[in-house]
Length: 293
Image (cartoon, rainbow, N blue to C red):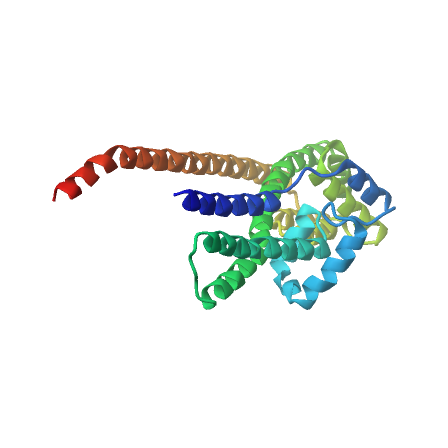
């Protein structure tokens, strides 16, 4: 019984370590200021020397192939570099693979021998699963960022419609609306408009390029609607207001769906607790019945 408890504790500790490693840490203020100033290079809280060592190793092992176009878009959305994500995949794979030696040590203390093929297969499976796990976490973070951007985009559309109703031109309405808001979403919009201006491009093309970079289709639809007003003189104020209303309704639906999903997940621990309680109460009676037979 003691060996079984030790084995369970070891496996549980390994799972906690892996989950803790995958949990996004609070950004370091010094590292963030350093990245803004461009003084030093930081890779997910790791020193530049560590990132410089691990990134070539990860790419030599083929982990760089995990950076697909969709993953690259998500990394651009969350503000993370491809190199830092590759390093995170490598460290997650190593931490997951370390569960196998810990499990073998516990089984060895218990006097249980296993064939060589089983630990090798388990090591490979955990290593591959650990390398892919950061992509799953990244996709979840990107979905949250897109919901936040769409929420800010609905406010931006309302501001653009108000400025168009006040008699401003399309470019002036876009610049004024982008400057009226705060947050990372409005910052991305302002940067896209400024980049288009200095490159001699139209602002709606800049918004379309930003929507392509971030993988946000609603922003590309906004750029297409605004281009009608800018190129053909169409009146799009009503359509922009309707688009803003649709984005708000969509946001509320996403919030309700997330709340319902969280409620369903909360019922699982209660069910497991009830199952354990019934098993704890019923096991002695079942054991006595079986002994009597």
